[in-house]
Amino acid sequence: MLVILKRDNEEANEHAAQLIAGAIKKKPSLTLGLATGNTMLGLYRHLVRLHQSGPLDFSGVVTFNLDEYLGLPASHPQSYHHFMHEHFFRHVNVLERNIHIPDGSIRGDYDAYCASYEQAIRAAGGIDLQLLGIGRNGHIGFNEPTSSLASRMRLKVLSRETLDDNSKFFGPGEEGPRCAITTITMGIGTILEARKILLLATGASKAAAIAKSIEGPITCAVSASALQLHPDVTFVLDEPAAAQLAERDYYHRVLQMTALLTPDRL
Ligand code: F6R
Image 1 (spheres, rainbow, N blue to C red):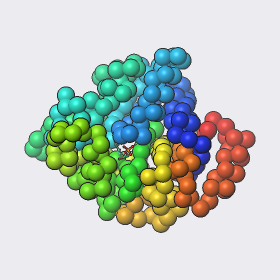
Image 2 (tube, rainbow, N blue to C red):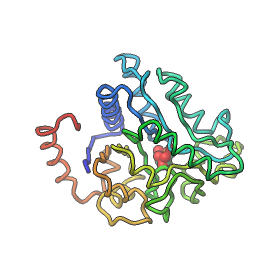
Image 3 (cartoon, helix red, strand yellow):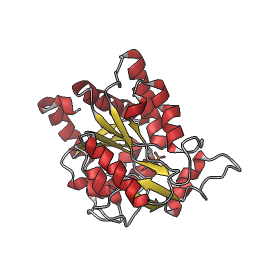
Image 4 (cartoon, protein in one colour):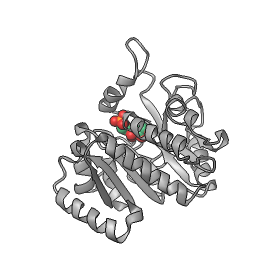
């Protein structure tokens, strides 16, 4: 596990974008797992800038999003389909056929749909790099507390805390949380199969979840603590998100050595 500490939100976003860009340059046909949410907005802005100025070429990249709200069609302005197209896909050259986002409008055999999404990931060779945010309660994807650490893609009911956090995306009077109570999300077991994982967390509201995930016990009460089981996880944090970590000095020293020994990890 590598913990990269950055001064502020902007530096953290830029660093995470550089790590993704480096992975794409190394493997132009990268299979990239993507996340949504407020944290990702700055990161996607940086990736778009790298595409426009670099140019960073996404034409060989295959993407799989973590989750979608059940009951929201792709065209709904609050869907994660809409979020991804608005903030990322329409600005870069990922090919439409290489974009995968769980379908929130499915009905009926949800298990079969989830199995087919996981099968598509396997058919693409598995996820090379999975990008994650983290909820205040430690969720990754929408694996809320008490999710099995071996869980697969499935429907997952959102906790009250996550509903409150996400309701800021819905305008006054807009129908939101009522239809957004359930998501289709990759499971923790699905996420842990990615070859590399990059978790980006910024802001003081994430500090407790980050400390528990990195330094606390592995527990289903904090889904992100399962990342301790993965051999290649990088956390990119700004100072407020790292504030409750007890071992900050140690992470700084590890970073200095990493810069000397394996600079391409940074
Ligand atoms: C969304 C996702 C979630 C978010 C988390 C943090 O695709 O996977 O785990 O990363 O809810 O959301 P923000 O960044 O809005 O605090």
